[in-house]
Image (cartoon, rainbow, N blue to C red):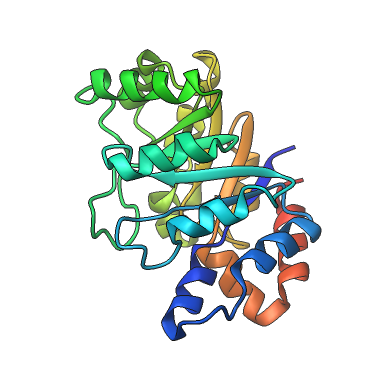
Length: 238
């Protein structure tokens, strides 16, 4: 079964907009677990505009499911945080410092030496590694050479065109997942997956181990409530 990891960045964004501790990020994470989420994802950025570095330290001892920390490993503060906290998984994303949201995967060929070294550092600390890549077969082959455990398919292109040409736009992701499995790596996915497009993606992606979903899930919870929303997403993954 594909695991659902709930990205709680948007909860932190709402909290930070007014200061204080409402909504309570820690309680939301614990509630998400209690409601059935099999993991919690955070993506701290250098300006801490949503997840703060302290949030990561506060969450680690309390979570009972998988903790996935996303971020750019070219930022030394991020590397230090991950090595200190030791989550179950680190997902490496090639974001710039002030980037609004992730919008591209790694060039695993141009960054091979760098990725190989940093992945080895994380794996030596006992942390499973995943790298954010587009559904590009050359980039996936390049990912294999870095020593990563998994890749996370960047799904924005799929989500953008799902409503108008889903049969066409899913093809690169199906082919990518098949290659990932053939290479002996694990398949994760994330970015703009939603109640509308998740089941179809799951059905056409081979050996999908985990999806990380934040914006759509948190938005849906405004209408359906967090517990019901998580159950709706889990249903799409069956």
